[in-house]
Length: 439
Image 1 (tube, rainbow, N blue to C red):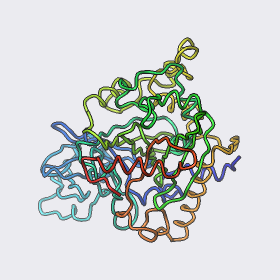
Image 2 (image 1 turned 60 degrees about the horizontal axis):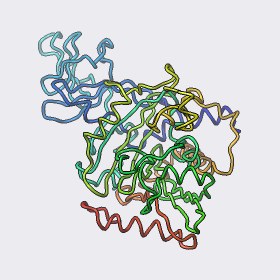
Image 3 (image 1 turned 180 degrees about the vertical axis):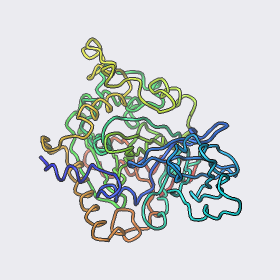
């Protein structure tokens, strides 16, 4: 169990908080690029407890500024996107993408007051369908050379979804290898050939065994956790009855992302981004090492489960996540449909908006969660002591641009050589890739 003081320390992310100070030193997903498509590329953003507005100016450049006009606080999400900036409809004050006020048309002729007015603003860049913001001190760090960033746009699909819970419990479900054998258990196996774009629907490695069956039949993996330059590598070993071992390699990408395999040719890089203390968005980049991603199919699959424009799941606590007791008896472990995002959403939202870890009892299989929390607490302490460069992927520890991969894969091989099997399987996949994926 954990003290309330420590639980607050690792969950609260507003300005001036310990965890918030850590997260602000990394690029954070702020919006999907598709949200800016249209005649008026302006979208409100609430990120790390701050209210902002994201827009694209007439030159196609991005700006992220405070949502409330520095004049009298009107909502800039309704601003006029014109004259290469954003103009407040209240009195016409005009701001460029850096937040600088460049015009006050109602002030006396010749007034230079606007030169002293600047809205809050943050650097933003677009990477493969996601707009990232840097909200920390100093210059933004380089982007790591992750697979999802170096792959061409044709091989990456981005999407997001909102959950009504704290970011930390949302992230922690992704570094828990055991839950997949229960929360995502299917009592009937689908044809893997019909599972494109869906988690756990492919064959296990290069066999004909559906992943759903393997997870169901081997629910007690041995779990190994290794510290890396980018965070944690988590290896789950499921020893099979035929003498072989299934190796599933996932990753915790510090501070709040995971990198996991979705199929034999595709991985997911997923950030769990705080809207505020009690809600978050997951942002996913699906990266293909094989054929280009069928973005139409993958978007249609996810729009069946989410509404626009806020990307809120259609199944939620207000309709009991679609729970069906007959389905729970015959088809799925949860009775909440076939989309595993709904299963995860129920699990993390049912804990409460901020999980009460003072009542928590972790087991041996929660080793990745305990290691991550220790890493986060150490990072908070480092920032408080003025040593922000000591964080994972910070310039004082490693050049972020040299961080590659990370390796995320399912593989099956002889139990005695399991530690070679997954490396060799990933090497073959990268060698046959259409883009420069070699590590």
